[in-house]
Structure formats: structure tokens, C-alpha cells
View 1 (cartoon, each protein chain N blue to C red):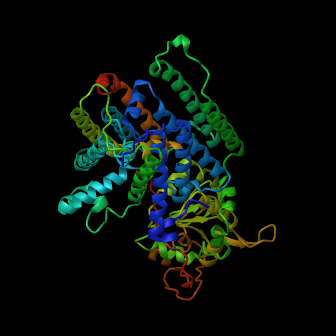
View 2: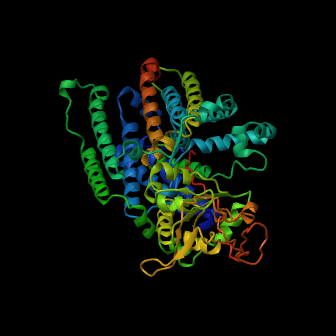
Length: 440
Length: 174
């Protein structure tokens, strides 16, 4: 599924060509729309010629409809698309500064490129000015770094803000843009062609009718189609995404989890997907209980997506079924370094058993694999929850008769010791491929 | 490069906008990112500064991120896009006979004044673009299409400030 990791897929030269080709289309469209002419750009602010508004917002809504449609039909993986992070106040102040620069200089950084390309001297001077401006910014930002990084809301989109589905938001944006275009056309008649308000024709221009009906139709289709759920999206990702499940690459042996918990370079994050009752009876040391459904909501999902490349997240359930389902959904949302603990808690207790008087093995009702019945809630108090700790080995069993379970017994006070398990290392820490926008 | 023939009129804005929107979508589809210009300008500026004052670049956090130590500011995909945009603009200009060495300005302002204001406006624009983490293309256009809240707030700010300022500088353009 798109987008593609071009630099690893096609090599540097092809990568440069793709970006160059996109830039070509960018420059071509800007010049075609008249963005090389400073008078046309400035006229926008005197309501004489609303070309800037029309071109810009047509482009935004056309692209918005296409992006939402492509994600809706499963052609584009939105989790790998760069969404400009919201730094609200630096953005607003920067925007206000740019508005002043726009009306003084008559260009913006993109349009000055096509003005320069068509040999407009004022465009070249503006371009030089812009280079000076970015230089001054780099020299001075250090003195107000705190403001520059303030009000960081991360990846925050209009549908999240409004609490509406993506398709509905896109339709609203389209309707708003069309009203804006229509208002712009009315203003052009008055300020551009000097008509009195009474003589203004309320009829939208034919191109607007055409583009408008096309956009409305397309956004209604996008809205009706909706966006895939995380589980549906995983199915759309194709065989490459399913391979870790089929070849068991996503399943990690408990002993590897134990080893990683001892690794000071790795941040281990264990998410327990079982209900609170089971969690209280026994859970792994440091595990956090999460509701699988809540995990997919914006708040918790953002925390997972924000984890550094040195963090690994393990999902654990009673067995594997719940963890696998959640693994798929989180994978579809782009969570990296995500694994399932092999065999779940049941298997963990096979390998690192609790004292026999605390937990006993029982056959499950449907004749499935054995589970464990606890005499009382142990939380993470049993050594089984912390096999990586030295103290777990000298833990005094609460049972009357001390049981030593295996070879490698370290003796003393009925302490427990577990064999050293052999396992294949599965965890490969990867830092996320940085998807960056042109202006990132 | 100047031609004797009259330049062709500009395309209908809705047509040009649709074309730009399709290009923007293709950019998201193939690369995962949108369009942009100001970050490339920032890289070019830092690259040039790095020739003359590498020690200063290393000591200034904002420049060091792009060109500190062994980092190469020129190895940036946005620069390919910028070169592409120059070529694209030139080709459209050639087809439509609009490539001509000239200076465009309002009717009531002298050429030196236009040059001064273009330089000043450019500097203000460049400064604001980096503060806002993107220019009209990289923030408003690209972020707007993927419905980023910050990008919409930014786009509205540009127009708000432009319209608020327009009356005071009307002599520049009218």
C-alpha cells in the first residue's frame, strides 16, 4: 500500500527524479494559475482578483478528497503519510508574520520560484529576501526556543478536533470552500470590475459550477465509503503485513522478554489485554492493563506512536488470540516494534510457574489448552512476574512444603529457580522511517 | 528569451487549482509527504552558510540540525522538488510566452521601492515560514489537504494578516 519508501525502493537517483517530477508539476500548476505575477497575487488582498484563494483552496480540497478517498478504498496508508504537526501558536504567529510579508513583497516562497523561473526581477529579489529571512530565523530562534516548541499538539486533525468522521469533515471543508469561491466571485465583480452591489450577478461562474458539482459528488462518495476500521485496514495491507504472524516472527519467547527487561538499552513496554480480574490474579512485572478498544483511540495510540526506536511493546493475553487481534489493529495504525508474547500468560506460567499452592493448572472448559486457577490475587508479587530479578530466585515460597522445580536450583529457603530457556531472538528494534513533508 | 508574441492569458483558477491538487495528491501518494519550498530554501541557505562559516553552523542549533558536523544540507529531497518547480514554472512560462526579463509592480510605486519591498517582504516571509514550520505550500496547502488543525489555523492567519495590512500599504499595489 502506498506511500512508498522511495529511497530504499528505487535508489537515490530515482528518488531525486520522483521529487523533481512532483516539483515540476508543482511549478507548472503555479505558473499556469498566474502565481508568477505579483500583481495577481497582491490583488487578492484588495478583493479585485481572487485567483490565489481559488487556486489554493481548490488544490487543498481536491487533494483532501483524493487523499480521503484513497485511504477509504485502502490504496493509501494514512499512518505513513506526513501530517504537519500542530504547534498552534508558533503557527499562528508565523502565519500573521507571513501575511504581512505577503502583502509587502507580493509573493510567497513557492510562488517566488515560478516568478524567478519566468525571469521576473521582483521574484528573484523576493527569493533573495526569503533566503535572508530563513537565515535570520536560524540565527535568532535560539533566543525564544521555548515559544518555538510551545503548544505542540502533535498530529492533530480536523476530524479529531470536531469529533466527526473523516468523510463528513471533507464534505464540510468542500462546502466551505465552494461558498468561499462564490463569495470571491461576487467580490471580484464589485472590486475588480467596479459593479455596484445591486448589479452583482449571484450566479456562480460555469467553471465553479463544474468543479463544485464534481467535488461535492466525489466527497459524498468518499463520505459514503467511510474509512476502514483498523482490522479492515490490516487486511488491506497485503501479504507482507501478515508474514510476521504466519512465520511467527511477531511472537516472542518469554525468555527473550525476560532478557530484554534486563537490557538497560531497551525500554520494555508490556500491555496486558486481559480483564481486570485476571490481571489482578497475576500479571507480569511492569505490565500495564489496557482495554484493547481504548488502545485504538487517539490518546493511547499517540503515546504508542510516540515511543522511541529503542522501545519495544509486547502484547499479552491469556493465550494468543486477543493479542494477535490487537497486534493487527495496532500494526495497521503504524505502531512499530510491536510483538506478541508467545502463548500468553498461560504459557508464561508454564515456563515460570507460580508456587503450586497459589496457582494450579486446570483444563479449560472447552477442552482447550490448560489455564491456571489462582487461590488469591497475586498481582505482580510472585517471582514469576519478575523472573529477571535476582531476588526472585531467593523468593520464599508461601507454600508449606517448599518446592524446588528444576535444575539450577540455588538453594536456601525453598527458593525457586528456572531453567535457562533457549529461544530464537525475534525482536529487531527499528526506528521509524521518518516521513517528512517538503516544509517539515 | 523574450518573444514578440503576446503572452497567453492565465488558465482558469479552478483548473489550475485542480491540477495543483492532483499533483499534491500524487506527492502524498508516492512520497508520503506534501509539497514545499521554504524548507528547501532553509537547507540551501544553511548549505551556503556552511561554506563560509562551518564553525558558526555547528554552534547554532537550528543550522547544526541540517549541516552540523558531517551532515550534508544539500542531501535533501526538498531541493530536488525546488529545482523541479523552477523547471516546471519555466516550461509553463515558455509554453504560454510568459518568460520575459521584467519587473512587476503596482502602478504608483517606483522600481527601487518595489525592489526594497520585495526584499523586505521576502525576508519577513522567510522568517515567518520557518517560525510556522512551513510556508504557504508546505503548511497551508499540504497540511490543509490532510486536515491538520495547525495548518488551517496557519492558513487563516496568513489571510487575516494580509487583509488587515492591505489597507495600510495600498499605495504599493494600487
